[in-house]
Image (cartoon, rainbow, N blue to C red):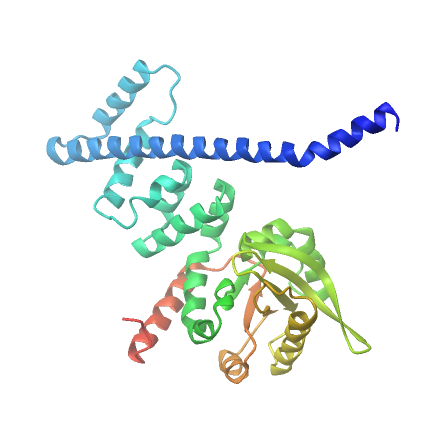
Length: 342
């Protein structure tokens, strides 16, 4: 073996060991960032508390806060984050979460920028908790969080939970799926073919996974399963890391029909028998269509033992007010029928 070949072999043999060190460095950097961020948020909290008390006790207003801002910046040359506007946000931040033992610890798990986005957008503690937990879990960037807020993810998720609670209770794997999806990033014409939809999803896979959830990993497009002497094609196949299961997605550019469910159930059976690994949970499925009649869906799913849901997709951002009203209607109906957990 020549010298160059020996050198390459040694590098190859040591790659695994080197990778372990990379993991140590990355973990240390992440821990350091979390510690710094925790202290930064705590500092903003304490300043917000200080301003809040001064406003209440001494009627501090815009002029005094502006003077306060200049005072801080004159003592710490080049310091950022202490504009009058941001100082007022610190006060609002404290007032929003003070005394809330459930939410106040969560704000220290995400960045100040993301805290401001949630604070400005969320109207209730329930919505704030939803986005705080989701942002911390998925480590959303500013752009990613803004997209989830703009697409009314909270309302869509709550509506989905209300409409599908009985089916989700049957199979925990369905909790990873929702009743509707927003695919505004696809940039496809309103009238399109299934192939165009599928190709657009693959071309925008990063945004598609953001919409579905970062626990989803892409497995394949037009995934082939063989049963007997015949080949069958699943439009999209994903894997959900948190649930440890395969997720089959069938695309339909028309209204949901009961026969669509039979096709999906067949695919799930094939996946569980021939593709699923022993340590994985049963596969779940989703039919993604343009329209659905909720009563038809309820009839179709009621006798189905397969873990599957039916969802609609739209290629434009939804109107938040319409979703808010829909969520209120569903909750009022659930209360009237005694379906709430309380």
